[in-house]
Image 1 (cartoon, helix red, strand yellow):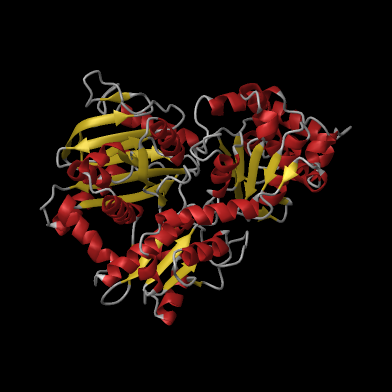
Image 2 (cartoon, helix red, strand yellow):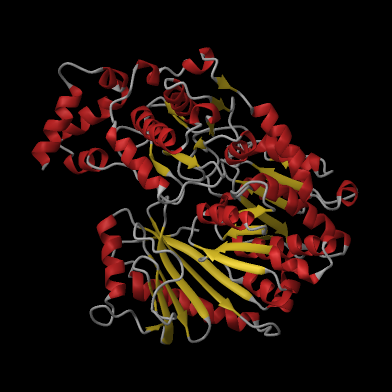
Length: 609
């Protein structure tokens, strides 16, 4: 196998070079170096497999190799997408595609999101497909919003969201504005593999977008429509104008600064105070150890220091592609309360239903109202629905499942007024079937302003919600594992914990009453032992329900080399001993990790905080 890999790589790096090889010379050099150094495992990793669509499309490090993001793999991916769309849509030649990009780039390889977006456009234009290429970096939700607004057949967003700076990605949206799901993802991959050689020299021509009349730039129109439609989520503009609260916003060196400023002004607020060191694009994310605001206080340091100096009460941070939102609030004594995704969802879910109910006093109207959450997220919306009478549904992890379910519900006259995933991804209303940090930031600001007028903080209102609907205390974290065989071994052990085909019976000494394994389709709580959620064999996910009411889940990330774990204690309304619930949850969480994942034995890296 090593000999075969070596021969394959030598043939790519020497001899008569094809057009593709000449165009890829900058990325062939590192492959040549790996060949010379005899690093066959690294070569095998890069060259002997292809990227596949996960919870956020294609995502991988930038660099040389067929399972890396580079000019060639993006051209190949776009050719496969283009071929599939021609087969699926009879009017594809008139509908076209939307393409957007974030601010990522890698100096050594010359690979950037903007360049990859232009190459994607060039592939489409080479087949006479109209391309709506947004002319500068945009928030990820702008692409699905534009797909729906323009009636395009599909959309492509070049982004790796909050991943490390080495990564980039290729996210595909269907004509309904939701991320592609099965069978489209598998069919597109099949089309990619059918034609790996670039069609023509035009596919490599990033300047084609400047010359071709089939390329349009809808950015100004889309931004104007988005901001106009956003006002449908604004319920208290006059109150916002008088609000004395000050807000700080960080865009984490990404796309969010300008768009969040506009959204605030649309809601009647002055623009939030930007973190100067982080407001401009920087593909190196030079002021944060990782560009993910979900990591909490450790990556919000500059924002919190600025808020302290400016006497601002609320800090917000959008991730580099502005589809996620982190929020912190100054505590009454000292320090800051950084809200988890589940806590912020409890507040936003309450707020969206509170305002919906003001406009729809007839209880019968709740029959067509829905809230959605991914299955690893808090069950707090379920508690709301149980008491308030609206509908609640869970989906598999990943906003693509939420987006597609929204589309199905809309076809039957139902509306989704709020949806979320615990990894600080929120959607208020239904103007775009994707998580949206820009609109969520404006909605949080208005909610904070309203509560301030009632002498309440966000944190105080969160506790009011828990008093009414029951405490929902959750823990979410992860371990890092970059070795797929180790991950497979861990989950195989769990499935055969007490003998072949027998899952664990206890966790931390507490009896496990139900097990749901979405990877295999097993659910012990169902009469037929089959999972209600769709089977997802491409990833690992097992959920345990314990006798004490704790729900715990282990799953692999769809975008990073992580095993994530989630635990939640759902108390009934009126149970107010939060500290004892917290202690019980902590005990189960430690046991879940130590007993089932065995970090030390498996050389897993625990999350650094």
